[in-house]
Image (cartoon, rainbow, N blue to C red; front, side):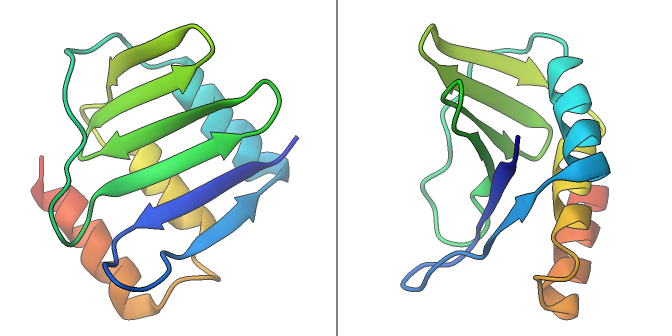
Length: 116
């Protein structure tokens, strides 16, 4: 199975996206499945970084990760999780290293580091 990662960062142009498979996919899935429950929150609508969306087709579900907060949507509804070290976002960014501009990647990693 393959995951699609979408970096929700741009306004007015297409956000970068890439597919993740193999070992990185397994690590990302394991990390997502191991998250503790967290408080409810509303996804940001501002300009700039709005999080990392991770999608899978079967069964259909997606996650949105924003600075240590994660929500999952699937047929059962919406669930919220906590990722206090931003490990999901860091792993997702690492999986896109070959698809992302190095300056953008460094800026995002610094932003996540500063968030904690």
